[in-house]
Amino acid sequence: MAKKLLVAVIGHRNSGKSETWKKLFNDKNIRTAQKSERRLEVGQNCEYTNVFLINGSPQERGKKVEEIIQVNYNPEIVLCSIQFKKEALNTLKYFHENDYYIYLHWLNPGYNDTYEYPDSENIIGDILKMDSLVGKRNGKTNSDARVEEIKNYIYDWSKRNRLLKVFSKV
Image (cartoon, rainbow, N blue to C red):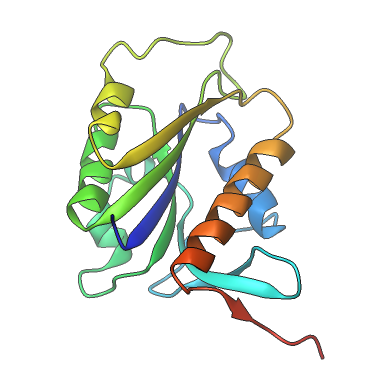
């Protein structure tokens, strides 16, 4: 089993990917970390874990994921927005080749999509060949349930892998 975790949200432009991270962090101006992790509160009793966020997909930025994360930086948990395009597989292969387990939500239909669209290029099929768990979620519905699902998954992963920390409220 992989030692690291990628939590990815894949979908078309304006499908709800950034909204997922905004709600997860309870921050309307959430941005990609710059060579550092941030604290994500995931449990009761002030429990948190550190994560690296890539908000704004590598495809939209015109960058490879390794340019965003940096060569020598190796975060345990990465949260990543990914455009639903064939090039998304390059991003996911990077994580797969670097021992990340892939937990992915496919927003279909996305918030601005007019209809549910097919996986005509077998992107999801190719992802399922990797060490992954893929779930299809409706980006048109309220994001609270899927955000809670992601938070619970990160909490369970962090607990199993001894990545949970506790901060004290002063």
